Amino acid sequence: MKFKHIHHVSQEFLDTFRRSYSPVFVLNTGRSGSAFIQKIYSKASNFNSYHEASPNLFLLPNFAFHNQDKGEMLRQIFAAARTELILSSAVQSKEYIESNQCLVFFIRQIVDLFPQARFIHLTRSPSDFVISAIKKGWHKNDSVWELGRIKSTDSKYWNSLTQIQKLGWVWNETHVFIETFKTDHPNNCITVRLEDVVNDQKEFDRLLSFTGVDKKESGLKFKNVVAKKVNEVSISPDEPPNMYKLEDFPNYSEWAEEDKNDLKSMTGILASQYNYNL
Image (cartoon, rainbow, N blue to C red):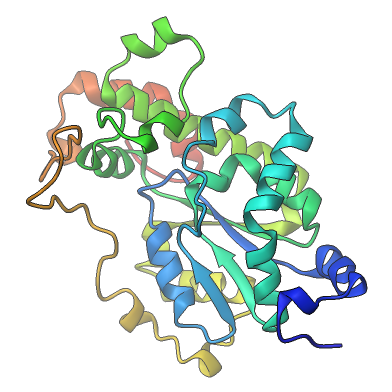
């Protein structure tokens, strides 16, 4: 039976939806191409594509990261925030994809609610992530986003770190968390590097194949999609004084050796695993 509105959905439809619907979530650190992935799928007619759906849960990543033992609470938070939106896609006979960094630490609860959920693990070079995040003001802005970012519970240790070290820690801890999840759910996940998706037609096609996009039917063309950067850092003329964005930051090759070594020490093992040279 088909329904035109989620308010008409039967219990049978809801049970089948939870058991068999396969929403897609892009797991990433932020500043890693998640908006670009959303752009790709916004052009696929069979997808409802979101970068950060509302509510985007930006206050909760750190809480979720440090409270994985509160699984039922996290499950209810996610269910309340997303069930209606995902159900709406199912009623429309469309796929759902969201590339929201704030959902990373809810992935175990997501797969509890949707056993057929699929996950795109999106990586970016730690140095490029750090540069982008520094330009965006991460760990310096006085904003609600900063309240929710993951951080060490050891405040003395955390406060002793430089901005580069903090961002290296975030990059590493986020990917360690995702890697642990992937060992338990290998068939639900695909790992792609942003650098490959934007430069390699085959990797672009592999991404589409994993999510069931018919390239010919959707009209998606690699050259058209990657032609323009998405979500670049911008500083508006009326930027408030509590924001510490930067117009520019040196390339990794121009960093002081101490900063390079700090990033290597924080991210080196996984950076090597993902074939990033630091």
